[in-house]
Every structure is written in C-alpha cells, then in structure tokens.
Length: 206
Image (cartoon, rainbow, N blue to C red):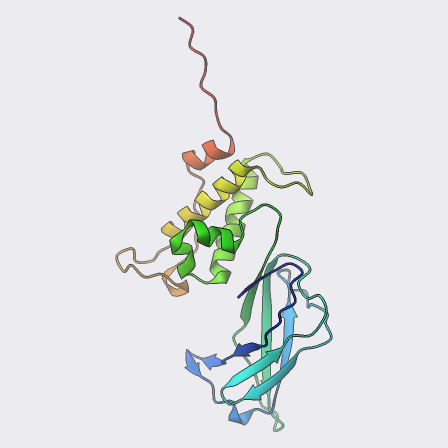
C-alpha cells in the first residue's frame, strides 16, 4: 500500500487478520484499537481511527487531517480486544509514503524493472533506501533542499536492482516474493561507482 506525502486516503482500509497464515476467528473480539507510527517509530497524532469488526475483517476508517507529513515506511498496528479481557495484536500493516525529492519512488522503480512489481512495497522501499544511502556514502553530499543529480538516481536504481537479484534464495525457482528474499550486504560494483563518479580518460600524447 502506497501513498504520497500529504495524501489523505479516501477509502476505508480493509484488514483480514491472520495467524500463521490462517484467517483469525474474530467472533471472540468486541473492539479494535489502531495506532499509526512513522518510520522513526513515533506515533502519528490524529483525531483517532475508527475500527469496526465485520465478520472476518476489520474495517479501518481513516481520520481526517494530515497523517503523512514525511516520506518513509509507516506501520499501522491493530490490537483486538474482548470484553472478557482477551487481547491480541495483529500482524502490522506497512504503508510506504513516497516523497518528491528526486530520488526513486516505488512507482518509478516498478516502471523501470518488471521484477520490482513482484515484491512487496515494504521490501522495495527498503532496497531503495539502502541503495540511496550507499550512493550518498560513495558520492559527494547532496545539499539540503536540492534534488540529486540524475547519475545518482541512476546509480540508486542499478544498486537496488543488483540487491534484488542477489537476494533471491533459490535462483532456479523463478519465484518472487518476500519469502524468497534475504536482504544482505552487496557492495557497489565498478559500473555503479563509475556512474556516481565518472572518470574521464587521460589524454594521450604522441
């Protein structure tokens, strides 16, 4: 699930709680509380979420006001409770908030790489974030408020793609998905370094 900075979702969020990949029986619960946190883990202040249990789903109504002030990976946490005292936390819902700072968004990445469409928003966000950090570590700093040069953006995409290809557990399986990947360190190769810091050929004197 993705939005952009400043978006206010218009449609309710439908969550199907599961335990060990099996749908949970929600008949034992009477209410649900919802918490939204940003990438730093700070709770996002809002007018409050309204969550309603309907059958085997929880319908979450977005509160009014600005929720997504910054780009990053947000976490929506649901806690089911019963009047008898039962309390269970549901697996988190991850929401990627895309920015407009010149670096690759999920939308742009998926437009360029078909394989990026086969993995989750969360995993692709992590790959792009790690690759951006590695590009900045090797290249010159980008001044605050300025957009990165195109060669940095190209290098970010190439590095994320390399990480994606290197992270497949079983290359012969042909499968893509969160369970088929393990994100591990993958250094910048010479081609990406050349993209970040192009080296001109030395003149030859005859």
